[in-house]
Amino acid sequence: MNIIAWIVLGAIAGYLAGFLVRGDEGMGVIGHIVLGIVGALVGGFLASVLFNTKPIDGPLDISSIVTAVIGAILVVVIVSAATGRNRSGRGAI
Image (cartoon, rainbow, N blue to C red):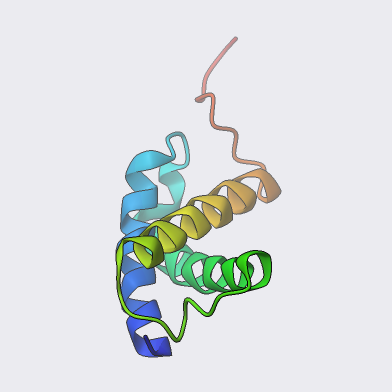
């Protein structure tokens, strides 16, 4: 699978990560899609390092979809933590 397919898969994974990670609605759909693209590329790279495979060059299958979604979720959670957005909600204690 080439880099264009990973970008499209990352956009879909970022959209899904927006539903799976609650409490960071301030990013919006476009923010999640951009973070999903980054997350898919990071997830593909980490999978190639950890499992000694080449998911970016491989076919589009369930493992590449799961890799992209996990990478997108990780990036969304890391960015939410780095920007100070908490996932517990807003308002008085």
